[in-house]
Length: 356
Image (cartoon, rainbow, N blue to C red):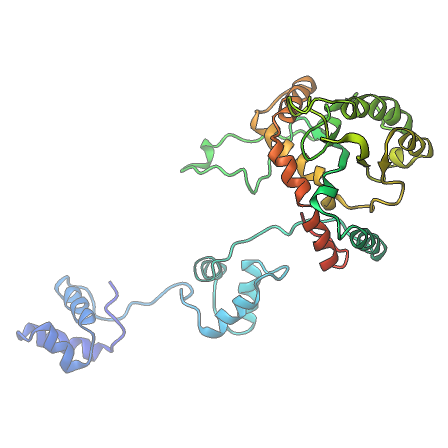
């Protein structure tokens, strides 16, 4: 029992006064001590405990003002783990354990540790291309963006591992938590899809071990799945049955700069089959956060995960198709409607990564 910070002489005098019948309140007033301290000393004496101050072990739990300033300045800086901060404090003459630093960061400052997001490295040339594209389309309205048909390929893994930061399980015993099995080289399914603000094409499943060269892209993706989608005329129906646009006479086809897309024969095919399309070099390279279909792939991956783990490529393909047709039209409309905001951000950041 800790009996307080007053000297032993004061404590002994207080106990003598209490034993003589002086009230605890009067003892506190006469000795200039707190009433709680008087009560604590009296309780210790009645239990036969020593009135000597017990030695304290470990680091103090409190931080002085200077140490708190050092910790506050470490926010949002790289390589500032709690252990590194504690080491830095020790070098400056402040005593604090890494657990004390952690408590101050989380409890007092309301901070928590984050993994640094990984984004593509963007060269000045690429930034310039983004900026040029953004300025060229800065006055486009939502109706202008709604004329675009967005297309892309994307891989999906069998036995994909969930995001560990989000896949948390609360339990009293860690041994009760089932593990996540990870495959070193998981099989992948490559798919192609196209979206508008109101509909989706059918999902094209690229056969295993099939490389998407220019010939395959033209003959099987553009010439079949894409043409089937743009030829639909029904204004109603499911997300993969209705027409891609209400007016298909003036749509703009978007594809990225993959070699199969920019091949001369592919460009000629697009010229002959589409009223408009972004030609080679018009759509900026390395711009995944500018393309709304990239967000659609992320939404699709989340829905596939919620359908449960599968063990075969065929089952993964089945779940991909189920998740694809479950996409709501409001999601598509919101993604396309946000293009003006994306363009504005590209201009504000001078062509840098916008993180959409």
